[in-house]
Image 1 (tube, helix red, strand yellow):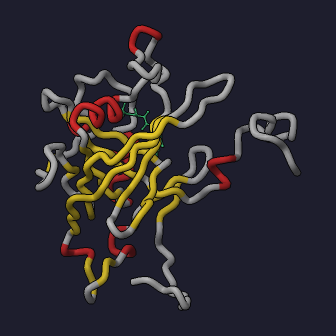
Image 2: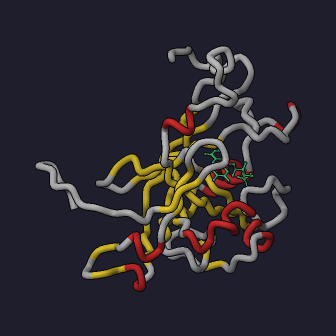
Length: 217
Ligand SMILES: Cc1cc2nc3c(=O)[nH]c(=O)nc-3n(C[C@H](O)[C@H](O)[C@H](O)COP(=O)(O)O)c2cc1C
């Protein structure tokens, strides 16, 4: 089968398979707060590490479909609340999603007004960060505190405006002591979840080592 982007239905596919092909994708559970201190929390699976030294991460925010033309920012983008907050404060937290918090993670993805705090909606407590003012998700196995490095506008399509890639420099790292075994983080202890295509998710539970000449630890 071959098709060009946007023509999957002509190729006999019910849904766009792109996300199912790039899978599993880690989930960045992004916490932020606005300039008045109202907290916000939402999952982003267009998320990854982009540099190790210094540690940097990125996530990509699609336009907020709820916003009309009057609510667009100067660049014409309809920002989701996370993006709006990060533009205001220049910082955000990344909370790692364990299997134990997967239901709360999905609840926090609900589209609610900016004044409503998704920590409360999802029944989550806040943990104080050390280098940023945005709160972190208590009970998450690890957190990255990030300072905004850059935002890059990505091109849109005929049907939809483009997305914004947010790149952050990691300024602080928290790891729960309980997930450290022999000086290494043991993912089997907290079972991170990741997004596949469609409505599918997976849990990391099968870990094996492969030696490579360029192995990095
Ligand atoms: C597992 C998961 C992954 C998601 N990944 C993204 C993503 O990469 N980019 C995006 O714009 N929205 C993504 N969403 C949708 C947002 O979480 C959702 O629009 C949320 O309401 C945004 O919240 P905010 O306006 O508080 O930032 C994802 C939702 C789920 C459940």
